[in-house]
Image (cartoon, rainbow, N blue to C red):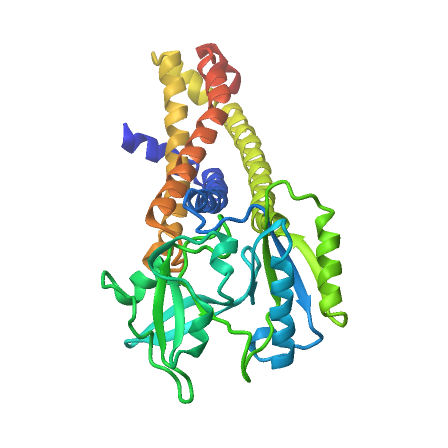
Amino acid sequence: MTRHLFKLVWNRKRSNALMILEICVSFLVVFLVATLGLFFLDNYRHPLGFEWKNVWNVRVGTGQHGGGSGGGSPEQAAIFARLLQEIRSFGAVEAAAGTEVIPFEQGGMGGNWKIDGRDVQMGIDEVTPGFADVMGLQMVAGRWFQQADSGLAWEPIVIDRDLARTVYGSADPIGRPFGKPEPKERQRRVIGVVSDFRKSGELMPNDNFMFLFKGLAGPEARPLHNLLVRVRPGTPAEFEEALVKRMQAVAPAWSFEVQPLRQVRATSSRFFLTPLIVAGMLAFFLLLMVGLGLIGVLWQNLLQRTREIGLRRAAGASRAAVHRQLLLEQIVVTSLGVLLGALLVVQIPVLDLIGVLSNRVFASGLLFAIVTMYLISILCTLYPSTLAARVQPAEALRYE
């Protein structure tokens, strides 16, 4: 039976080749959209590592380029420290801290570090001691930064659990050196480990992350770009005006832009989800066109094969047999298109083209695309095959 089906498909290879190509392209589009959606969904299920509700960000403009990485002066760092003190004096403020980059913000600091002969990629942020209280970080080992850390002969760092596993495996990282310092750099040592910190938000996967201690006193001190403020629940929006007025009194030449962290999160979500929604709509209309095209092609095939089907009925084939034959033919055509698309798709894990894509997400996206293509193909075949099954033997005489 299978051999006969392949022979029938081969006899109509020109029209079937176009359908196979359509199915292959549609399969690839469905796979990409489904895999991206499942990737975001899988990431969303994992803990974020920090608390963003009731947190406001104040973007600080000092008039200097480069920010905390080299711009500014010790005098400006002292002004930044005064701003922190003033903010903490508000009754509506639970905690405040300085940071170079903020959660959910696109871009930031990061790079590759050479550790024990391995290249380790990580995100980096410079923060003041109050950052853990503002963002509700959970310590899993060691401690967070303290003001007294500015007097250490080595540079203290806090890393997240992902980075601790990557660098130290199952060993305890507390007190151990982190990498080999460059000339004129201080040795970095781990003083604490926090839970997995996903700076880019819920839709992005876990990533290695390191926090650097940022002191605001001394000849090398520099201001930071952002002030994060945790306010008490129910704090009215009018508090923003009072906050900016107080900061402007401390630093009249500086600029301040206040934005709730929930807005930064919403902007980040739109940045990632908008392409997915657009791609999903395009995939929907593509599948709709493919479905209508399949119905049209199958209808045309029915008209061309009326004599063949009538002869089959005259030879004793039942309606069910004709209906089953046409469905199986379309399943063979669909299988060839899906197989061609799957051969292209499996190159992704084989060649390690997307390292952040887990095997579970890849397999789920592949299965979803396969089921979708078979479902569409079968649904589009049902009506034409039903009409074909109704052809009477006498219909074949009209085509003699």
